[in-house]
Image (spheres, one colour):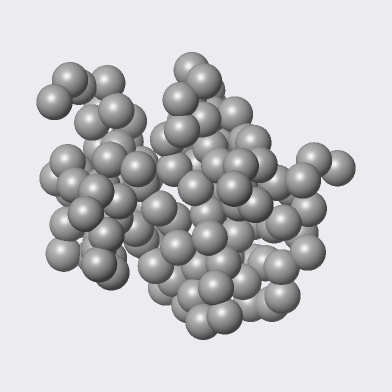
Amino acid sequence: MKPAEEYIYNAQEPYRDILMHLQAVIVRTLPSVDLKFKYSLPYFYIEEKPFCHLNCSKNYVDLVFKSGQHLTKFTELLVVDGRKKMKSLRYTSLEEIDNMVLEAVLNDAFVVRNKKF
């Protein structure tokens, strides 16, 4: 098993279910992603460039977008948490995940990734 997969599968509940669900939706929405393990976290890469990553803390799971400052979909749901560029979708339970919102933000981030700012 790859280190990124181990991170996800070895997480404590309820975070393991959240991480597994997020991984599945990311791969289904953006089949070209490549899961790697960087900075001790699961990172999703597209064409050898970091796209987003998962971070599990004691109280939540963050799906962090590197170019979050440019996202335009569901910005009211994105957590800044003192960061200048990165923004995240934050979840404390599996029931909080709205797949429609998640897929919209993933697709928005993919479009943003391809723009030149």
